[in-house]
Image (cartoon, rainbow, N blue to C red; front, side, top):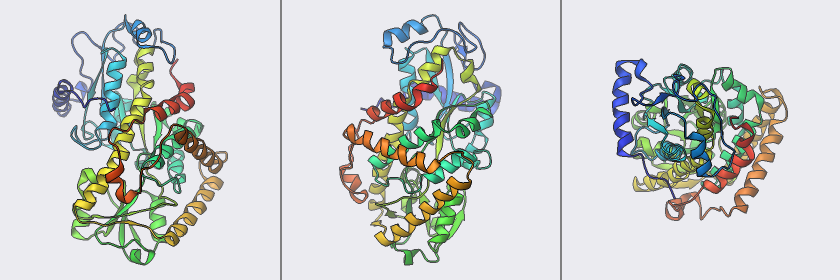
Amino acid sequence: MALPATSPRRTGRTRRLTGAISAAAALSLTLSACAGSAGSGGGAGAGGGGEGYEAGADQAAIDEALADLDPVTIIYQPSAASQESVQSPSGTVLAEAIEERSGGKITVDMVWGQAIAPYGELDSALADGRVDLAYSLPVYKPAEYPALNALGDALGGSDPSPFVGEMVTNAMALDVAWNTPEIVAEYEEKGLTPISPITASGGYYSVCSATGMTQEDFQGRQVRIASKTQGELISHMGASPVSMEYTETYEALQRGTVDCTLGQLVPSAEAGIFEVAPNVGYMTETSFSRAPGALVAGSGFAELPLAYQQVIFDSYADYFQGQMMTTIGGNADGIRQAKEAGGEIEQFPEEFQTEIAAFNEENLAKINESGPIEGDLEAAVTAASEKWTAKAAELGYEDGGTTADMDQWYDVDSDFRPLGQAIYDEVLLPHRPS
Protein backbone atom coordinates (compact mmCIF):
# COMPACT_ATOMS: atom_id res chain seq x y z
CA MET A 1 0.00 0.00 0.00
CA ALA A 2 1.33 3.44 -0.87
CA LEU A 3 2.15 5.89 1.85
CA PRO A 4 -0.04 8.98 1.87
CA ALA A 5 0.64 11.91 -0.40
CA THR A 6 2.54 14.93 0.79
CA SER A 7 0.78 16.58 3.68
CA PRO A 8 -0.70 20.09 3.47
CA ARG A 9 1.82 21.04 6.14
CA ARG A 10 4.74 20.27 3.83
CA THR A 11 3.03 21.86 0.85
CA GLY A 12 2.77 25.14 2.69
CA ARG A 13 6.44 25.11 3.64
CA THR A 14 7.44 24.26 0.11
CA ARG A 15 5.49 27.19 -1.32
CA ARG A 16 7.19 29.56 1.10
CA LEU A 17 10.55 28.01 0.28
CA THR A 18 10.08 28.41 -3.46
CA GLY A 19 9.37 32.08 -3.00
CA ALA A 20 12.41 32.46 -0.79
CA ILE A 21 14.64 30.84 -3.40
CA SER A 22 13.70 33.44 -5.95
CA ALA A 23 14.60 36.14 -3.42
CA ALA A 24 17.88 34.73 -2.14
CA ALA A 25 19.80 31.52 -2.58
CA ALA A 26 20.95 31.84 1.00
CA LEU A 27 17.56 30.68 2.17
CA SER A 28 17.85 27.33 0.42
CA LEU A 29 17.94 25.45 3.70
CA THR A 30 14.99 26.72 5.74
CA LEU A 31 15.05 25.65 9.39
CA SER A 32 12.66 25.94 12.27
CA ALA A 33 13.93 27.96 15.21
CA CYS A 34 15.04 24.87 17.12
CA ALA A 35 16.35 22.77 14.25
CA GLY A 36 19.92 22.24 13.05
CA SER A 37 20.76 22.57 9.36
CA ALA A 38 21.65 19.58 7.25
CA GLY A 39 24.51 21.62 5.92
CA SER A 40 25.37 23.91 8.83
CA GLY A 41 27.05 21.55 11.26
CA GLY A 42 24.83 22.93 13.99
CA GLY A 43 23.17 20.92 16.72
CA ALA A 44 24.04 17.84 18.75
CA GLY A 45 25.97 15.19 16.90
CA ALA A 46 26.27 17.29 13.74
CA GLY A 47 29.20 17.21 11.35
CA GLY A 48 28.71 13.61 10.30
CA GLY A 49 29.59 12.19 13.71
CA GLY A 50 27.63 10.55 16.46
CA GLU A 51 26.54 6.99 16.94
CA GLY A 52 24.55 5.14 14.34
CA TYR A 53 22.35 2.08 14.65
CA GLU A 54 22.54 -1.45 13.29
CA ALA A 55 21.05 -2.22 9.90
CA GLY A 56 17.67 -3.88 10.30
CA ALA A 57 17.12 -2.34 13.75
CA ASP A 58 13.54 -1.99 14.90
CA GLN A 59 11.92 1.42 15.33
CA ALA A 60 12.60 1.49 19.08
CA ALA A 61 16.35 1.13 18.48
CA ILE A 62 16.27 3.82 15.80
CA ASP A 63 14.38 6.16 18.12
CA GLU A 64 16.99 5.57 20.83
CA ALA A 65 19.85 6.33 18.42
CA LEU A 66 18.18 9.60 17.41
CA ALA A 67 17.00 10.63 20.87
CA ASP A 68 19.68 13.26 21.58
CA LEU A 69 19.90 14.67 18.06
CA ASP A 70 18.49 18.07 17.12
CA PRO A 71 15.78 18.08 14.43
CA VAL A 72 16.86 18.97 10.90
CA THR A 73 15.16 19.99 7.68
CA ILE A 74 16.47 18.75 4.36
CA ILE A 75 15.58 20.04 0.90
CA TYR A 76 14.52 17.32 -1.55
CA GLN A 77 14.02 18.05 -5.24
CA PRO A 78 12.21 15.08 -6.83
CA SER A 79 11.50 14.53 -10.51
CA ALA A 80 7.83 15.52 -10.61
CA ALA A 81 6.53 18.89 -11.76
CA SER A 82 4.00 19.12 -8.94
CA GLN A 83 2.42 17.26 -6.06
CA GLU A 84 -0.54 16.43 -8.29
CA SER A 85 1.67 14.87 -10.98
CA VAL A 86 1.43 11.19 -11.90
CA GLN A 87 5.16 11.15 -11.09
CA SER A 88 4.75 12.49 -7.54
CA PRO A 89 4.97 9.10 -5.73
CA SER A 90 8.63 8.89 -6.74
CA GLY A 91 9.17 11.74 -4.30
CA THR A 92 6.39 11.64 -1.73
CA VAL A 93 6.76 7.99 -0.72
CA LEU A 94 10.45 8.45 0.09
CA ALA A 95 9.86 11.73 1.93
CA GLU A 96 7.14 10.22 4.11
CA ALA A 97 9.34 7.20 4.87
CA ILE A 98 12.28 9.36 5.96
CA GLU A 99 10.08 11.44 8.24
CA GLU A 100 8.38 8.39 9.73
CA ARG A 101 11.59 6.40 10.21
CA SER A 102 13.21 9.38 11.93
CA GLY A 103 10.28 9.82 14.27
CA GLY A 104 9.68 13.27 12.82
CA LYS A 105 13.20 14.48 13.57
CA ILE A 106 13.99 14.84 9.89
CA THR A 107 11.60 17.12 8.03
CA VAL A 108 11.68 16.82 4.25
CA ASP A 109 10.79 19.97 2.35
CA MET A 110 9.95 19.07 -1.24
CA VAL A 111 10.61 21.51 -4.07
CA TRP A 112 8.74 20.57 -7.23
CA GLY A 113 9.49 21.24 -10.85
CA GLN A 114 13.27 21.72 -10.49
CA ALA A 115 12.52 25.11 -8.91
CA ILE A 116 15.93 25.40 -7.24
CA ALA A 117 18.08 24.00 -10.03
CA PRO A 118 17.29 22.48 -13.43
CA TYR A 119 18.93 19.17 -14.21
CA GLY A 120 21.87 20.77 -15.99
CA GLU A 121 22.75 22.79 -12.86
CA LEU A 122 21.75 20.27 -10.22
CA ASP A 123 25.24 18.95 -9.43
CA SER A 124 26.34 22.45 -8.43
CA ALA A 125 23.23 22.96 -6.27
CA LEU A 126 23.88 19.66 -4.48
CA ALA A 127 27.55 20.45 -3.99
CA ASP A 128 27.00 23.95 -2.58
CA GLY A 129 24.14 22.90 -0.28
CA ARG A 130 21.17 24.56 -1.97
CA VAL A 131 19.69 21.07 -2.40
CA ASP A 132 20.32 18.15 -0.05
CA LEU A 133 18.68 15.27 -1.90
CA ALA A 134 17.53 15.11 -5.50
CA TYR A 135 16.53 13.04 -8.48
CA SER A 136 19.24 13.74 -11.02
CA LEU A 137 19.61 13.12 -14.76
CA PRO A 138 23.33 12.44 -15.37
CA VAL A 139 22.41 11.51 -18.94
CA TYR A 140 22.28 15.27 -19.60
CA LYS A 141 26.06 15.36 -19.01
CA PRO A 142 27.50 12.39 -20.92
CA ALA A 143 31.02 13.85 -20.90
CA GLU A 144 30.97 14.05 -17.08
CA TYR A 145 29.25 10.70 -16.55
CA PRO A 146 30.64 8.46 -19.31
CA ALA A 147 30.51 5.25 -17.27
CA LEU A 148 26.94 5.80 -16.10
CA ASN A 149 25.80 6.61 -19.61
CA ALA A 150 27.56 3.52 -20.93
CA LEU A 151 25.49 1.42 -18.53
CA GLY A 152 22.32 3.20 -19.66
CA ASP A 153 23.18 2.33 -23.26
CA ALA A 154 23.91 -1.24 -22.21
CA LEU A 155 20.32 -1.58 -20.95
CA GLY A 156 19.10 -1.66 -24.55
CA GLY A 157 17.66 -5.12 -25.01
CA SER A 158 16.52 -5.53 -21.39
CA ASP A 159 13.15 -7.12 -20.56
CA PRO A 160 10.52 -4.89 -22.24
CA SER A 161 7.54 -6.02 -20.20
CA PRO A 162 5.72 -3.06 -18.61
CA PHE A 163 5.54 -4.60 -15.12
CA VAL A 164 8.16 -7.23 -14.24
CA GLY A 165 10.56 -5.87 -16.85
CA GLU A 166 10.58 -2.45 -15.20
CA MET A 167 11.36 -3.92 -11.78
CA VAL A 168 14.07 -6.25 -13.07
CA THR A 169 15.79 -3.61 -15.19
CA ASN A 170 15.92 -1.15 -12.28
CA ALA A 171 17.23 -3.84 -9.93
CA MET A 172 19.91 -5.18 -12.23
CA ALA A 173 21.06 -1.71 -13.31
CA LEU A 174 21.55 -0.66 -9.70
CA ASP A 175 23.35 -3.93 -8.93
CA VAL A 176 25.79 -3.35 -11.78
CA ALA A 177 26.22 0.36 -10.93
CA TRP A 178 27.12 -0.15 -7.28
CA ASN A 179 29.64 -2.80 -8.32
CA THR A 180 31.24 -0.59 -10.98
CA PRO A 181 33.91 1.65 -9.38
CA GLU A 182 34.00 3.99 -12.38
CA ILE A 183 30.31 4.89 -11.89
CA VAL A 184 30.57 5.51 -8.15
CA ALA A 185 33.72 7.61 -8.70
CA GLU A 186 31.88 9.93 -11.11
CA TYR A 187 29.73 11.10 -8.18
CA GLU A 188 32.43 11.12 -5.52
CA GLU A 189 34.70 13.29 -7.66
CA LYS A 190 31.98 15.96 -7.52
CA GLY A 191 31.55 15.67 -3.77
CA LEU A 192 28.19 13.91 -4.16
CA THR A 193 26.87 10.80 -2.41
CA PRO A 194 24.84 8.39 -4.53
CA ILE A 195 21.96 6.67 -2.78
CA SER A 196 20.83 5.06 -6.02
CA PRO A 197 23.69 5.73 -8.49
CA ILE A 198 21.41 4.70 -11.32
CA THR A 199 17.64 4.66 -11.55
CA ALA A 200 16.76 2.95 -14.80
CA SER A 201 13.34 4.59 -14.62
CA GLY A 202 10.93 3.43 -17.34
CA GLY A 203 11.30 1.71 -20.65
CA TYR A 204 11.10 3.70 -23.87
CA TYR A 205 8.24 3.51 -26.36
CA SER A 206 7.62 5.10 -29.72
CA VAL A 207 4.87 7.70 -29.39
CA CYS A 208 3.72 8.93 -32.81
CA SER A 209 1.16 11.22 -34.37
CA ALA A 210 0.37 8.60 -37.04
CA THR A 211 -0.30 4.88 -36.81
CA GLY A 212 2.09 2.23 -38.10
CA MET A 213 5.05 0.64 -36.32
CA THR A 214 6.67 -1.38 -39.11
CA GLN A 215 10.14 -0.61 -40.37
CA GLU A 216 8.59 0.74 -43.55
CA ASP A 217 6.43 3.12 -41.51
CA PHE A 218 9.52 4.64 -39.93
CA GLN A 219 11.24 5.41 -43.22
CA GLY A 220 11.68 9.18 -43.35
CA ARG A 221 10.02 9.93 -40.01
CA GLN A 222 11.47 12.63 -37.79
CA VAL A 223 11.86 11.12 -34.30
CA ARG A 224 12.81 12.99 -31.14
CA ILE A 225 15.45 11.01 -29.19
CA ALA A 226 16.91 11.21 -25.68
CA SER A 227 20.47 9.97 -26.21
CA LYS A 228 23.21 9.51 -28.78
CA THR A 229 22.67 5.76 -28.87
CA GLN A 230 18.95 6.18 -29.47
CA GLY A 231 19.82 8.51 -32.32
CA GLU A 232 22.07 5.88 -33.89
CA LEU A 233 19.30 3.30 -33.59
CA ILE A 234 16.71 5.59 -35.16
CA SER A 235 19.05 6.22 -38.09
CA HIS A 236 19.52 2.46 -38.36
CA MET A 237 15.72 2.13 -38.53
CA GLY A 238 15.60 4.50 -41.49
CA ALA A 239 14.23 7.51 -39.63
CA SER A 240 15.87 10.84 -38.80
CA PRO A 241 16.76 11.47 -35.13
CA VAL A 242 16.03 14.90 -33.68
CA SER A 243 17.64 15.99 -30.41
CA MET A 244 15.64 18.52 -28.41
CA GLU A 245 14.68 19.35 -24.85
CA TYR A 246 11.75 17.25 -23.70
CA THR A 247 9.82 20.39 -22.82
CA GLU A 248 9.78 21.28 -26.53
CA THR A 249 8.40 17.90 -27.63
CA TYR A 250 4.67 18.64 -27.31
CA GLU A 251 4.84 21.70 -29.53
CA ALA A 252 7.10 19.94 -32.03
CA LEU A 253 4.62 17.07 -32.37
CA GLN A 254 1.69 19.47 -32.54
CA ARG A 255 3.29 21.45 -35.37
CA GLY A 256 4.55 18.38 -37.19
CA THR A 257 8.19 19.33 -36.72
CA VAL A 258 8.67 15.76 -35.51
CA ASP A 259 6.48 12.73 -36.20
CA CYS A 260 7.34 10.68 -33.11
CA THR A 261 9.19 10.77 -29.86
CA LEU A 262 11.01 7.98 -28.09
CA GLY A 263 9.88 8.43 -24.54
CA GLN A 264 8.82 6.86 -21.30
CA LEU A 265 5.07 6.69 -20.89
CA VAL A 266 4.89 8.42 -17.51
CA PRO A 267 6.44 11.77 -18.57
CA SER A 268 4.46 11.54 -21.80
CA ALA A 269 1.30 11.22 -19.72
CA GLU A 270 2.29 14.13 -17.49
CA ALA A 271 3.15 16.36 -20.46
CA GLY A 272 -0.06 15.61 -22.34
CA ILE A 273 1.87 14.18 -25.29
CA PHE A 274 -0.93 11.75 -26.17
CA GLU A 275 -3.18 14.68 -27.08
CA VAL A 276 -1.03 15.26 -30.17
CA ALA A 277 0.61 11.83 -30.60
CA PRO A 278 -1.73 9.10 -29.35
CA ASN A 279 -0.20 6.09 -31.11
CA VAL A 280 2.12 3.92 -29.02
CA GLY A 281 4.53 1.27 -30.28
CA TYR A 282 5.84 -1.34 -27.85
CA MET A 283 8.18 -4.32 -27.94
CA THR A 284 8.00 -7.82 -26.56
CA GLU A 285 11.44 -9.29 -27.36
CA THR A 286 13.91 -6.41 -26.96
CA SER A 287 13.91 -2.76 -25.90
CA PHE A 288 15.39 0.65 -26.54
CA SER A 289 18.38 1.87 -24.54
CA ARG A 290 17.51 4.01 -21.53
CA ALA A 291 18.36 7.51 -20.34
CA PRO A 292 18.84 6.78 -16.62
CA GLY A 293 18.44 9.00 -13.61
CA ALA A 294 19.78 8.74 -10.07
CA LEU A 295 18.98 9.58 -6.44
CA VAL A 296 21.86 11.70 -5.17
CA ALA A 297 22.68 13.42 -1.88
CA GLY A 298 24.67 16.64 -1.70
CA SER A 299 27.35 18.09 0.56
CA GLY A 300 24.92 18.51 3.46
CA PHE A 301 24.43 14.75 3.67
CA ALA A 302 27.99 14.17 4.89
CA GLU A 303 27.49 16.78 7.61
CA LEU A 304 24.41 15.10 9.04
CA PRO A 305 24.79 12.94 12.15
CA LEU A 306 25.55 9.35 11.16
CA ALA A 307 22.17 8.08 12.35
CA TYR A 308 20.37 10.58 10.11
CA GLN A 309 22.47 9.49 7.13
CA GLN A 310 21.48 5.91 7.88
CA VAL A 311 17.78 6.80 8.13
CA ILE A 312 17.88 8.30 4.64
CA PHE A 313 19.93 5.46 3.16
CA ASP A 314 17.81 2.77 4.84
CA SER A 315 14.65 4.18 3.21
CA TYR A 316 15.66 2.75 -0.19
CA ALA A 317 12.86 0.14 -0.29
CA ASP A 318 10.37 3.00 0.01
CA TYR A 319 12.15 4.91 -2.73
CA PHE A 320 11.85 1.83 -4.94
CA GLN A 321 8.16 1.60 -4.08
CA GLY A 322 7.59 5.21 -5.13
CA GLN A 323 9.65 4.82 -8.29
CA MET A 324 7.72 1.74 -9.39
CA MET A 325 4.39 3.36 -8.54
CA THR A 326 5.47 6.19 -10.83
CA THR A 327 7.05 4.13 -13.60
CA ILE A 328 4.72 1.14 -13.76
CA GLY A 329 1.62 3.07 -12.77
CA GLY A 330 2.64 5.64 -15.37
CA ASN A 331 2.82 2.91 -18.01
CA ALA A 332 -0.77 1.95 -17.27
CA ASP A 333 -1.92 5.57 -17.17
CA GLY A 334 -0.11 6.33 -20.41
CA ILE A 335 -1.87 3.47 -22.20
CA ARG A 336 -5.19 4.71 -20.83
CA GLN A 337 -4.55 8.26 -22.00
CA ALA A 338 -3.45 7.11 -25.45
CA LYS A 339 -6.64 5.08 -25.89
CA GLU A 340 -8.83 7.94 -24.67
CA ALA A 341 -7.15 10.16 -27.27
CA GLY A 342 -8.13 7.70 -29.99
CA GLY A 343 -4.69 6.18 -30.45
CA GLU A 344 -3.65 2.66 -31.32
CA ILE A 345 -1.36 0.55 -29.12
CA GLU A 346 0.70 -1.47 -31.57
CA GLN A 347 3.34 -4.14 -31.10
CA PHE A 348 6.47 -3.77 -33.21
CA PRO A 349 6.54 -6.62 -35.78
CA GLU A 350 8.79 -9.50 -34.71
CA GLU A 351 11.12 -9.12 -37.68
CA PHE A 352 11.57 -5.42 -36.86
CA GLN A 353 12.32 -6.33 -33.24
CA THR A 354 14.93 -8.81 -34.46
CA GLU A 355 16.62 -5.99 -36.37
CA ILE A 356 16.58 -3.75 -33.29
CA ALA A 357 17.88 -6.57 -31.07
CA ALA A 358 20.80 -7.10 -33.44
CA PHE A 359 21.66 -3.40 -33.18
CA ASN A 360 21.51 -3.59 -29.36
CA GLU A 361 23.80 -6.61 -29.27
CA GLU A 362 26.33 -4.97 -31.58
CA ASN A 363 26.22 -1.76 -29.55
CA LEU A 364 26.75 -3.62 -26.27
CA ALA A 365 29.74 -5.43 -27.75
CA LYS A 366 31.24 -2.05 -28.75
CA ILE A 367 30.68 -0.62 -25.25
CA ASN A 368 32.21 -3.72 -23.72
CA GLU A 369 35.26 -3.55 -25.95
CA SER A 370 36.10 0.14 -25.88
CA GLY A 371 33.85 1.84 -23.34
CA PRO A 372 34.82 3.69 -20.16
CA ILE A 373 34.17 0.70 -17.86
CA GLU A 374 36.89 -1.84 -17.22
CA GLY A 375 35.93 -5.48 -17.04
CA ASP A 376 33.17 -7.35 -18.80
CA LEU A 377 30.12 -5.07 -18.69
CA GLU A 378 28.19 -7.37 -21.00
CA ALA A 379 28.67 -10.33 -18.66
CA ALA A 380 27.78 -8.21 -15.62
CA VAL A 381 24.53 -6.99 -17.20
CA THR A 382 23.56 -10.52 -18.28
CA ALA A 383 24.29 -12.04 -14.87
CA ALA A 384 22.42 -9.30 -13.00
CA SER A 385 19.44 -9.62 -15.33
CA GLU A 386 19.21 -13.37 -14.71
CA LYS A 387 19.63 -12.90 -10.96
CA TRP A 388 16.87 -10.31 -10.56
CA THR A 389 14.51 -12.02 -12.99
CA ALA A 390 14.72 -15.08 -10.75
CA LYS A 391 14.25 -12.99 -7.60
CA ALA A 392 11.16 -11.27 -9.00
CA ALA A 393 9.66 -14.64 -9.92
CA GLU A 394 10.51 -16.02 -6.47
CA LEU A 395 8.62 -13.12 -4.89
CA GLY A 396 5.60 -13.85 -7.08
CA TYR A 397 5.67 -10.90 -9.48
CA GLU A 398 4.27 -11.45 -12.96
CA ASP A 399 2.66 -9.45 -15.75
CA GLY A 400 -1.11 -9.75 -15.89
CA GLY A 401 -1.38 -9.24 -19.63
CA THR A 402 0.20 -7.28 -22.46
CA THR A 403 1.23 -3.66 -22.78
CA ALA A 404 -1.82 -3.04 -24.98
CA ASP A 405 -4.27 -3.88 -22.19
CA MET A 406 -2.19 -2.82 -19.19
CA ASP A 407 -4.73 -0.15 -18.30
CA GLN A 408 -7.14 -2.99 -17.53
CA TRP A 409 -4.96 -5.43 -15.56
CA TYR A 410 -2.55 -3.24 -13.58
CA ASP A 411 -3.32 -3.14 -9.83
CA VAL A 412 -2.73 0.35 -8.43
CA ASP A 413 -2.23 -1.19 -4.97
CA SER A 414 0.73 -3.29 -6.08
CA ASP A 415 3.38 -3.65 -3.36
CA PHE A 416 6.91 -3.37 -4.76
CA ARG A 417 8.67 -3.12 -1.39
CA PRO A 418 9.57 -6.84 -1.11
CA LEU A 419 11.77 -6.56 -4.19
CA GLY A 420 13.01 -3.14 -3.06
CA GLN A 421 14.06 -4.64 0.28
CA ALA A 422 15.85 -7.48 -1.50
CA ILE A 423 17.76 -4.94 -3.58
CA TYR A 424 18.68 -3.04 -0.43
CA ASP A 425 19.84 -6.19 1.38
CA GLU A 426 21.90 -7.56 -1.50
CA VAL A 427 23.17 -4.40 -3.21
CA LEU A 428 23.03 -1.29 -1.03
CA LEU A 429 23.81 -2.68 2.42
CA PRO A 430 27.59 -2.97 1.87
CA HIS A 431 27.64 0.77 1.06
CA ARG A 432 25.61 1.87 4.10
CA PRO A 433 27.05 4.87 6.00
CA SER A 434 28.99 3.65 9.02
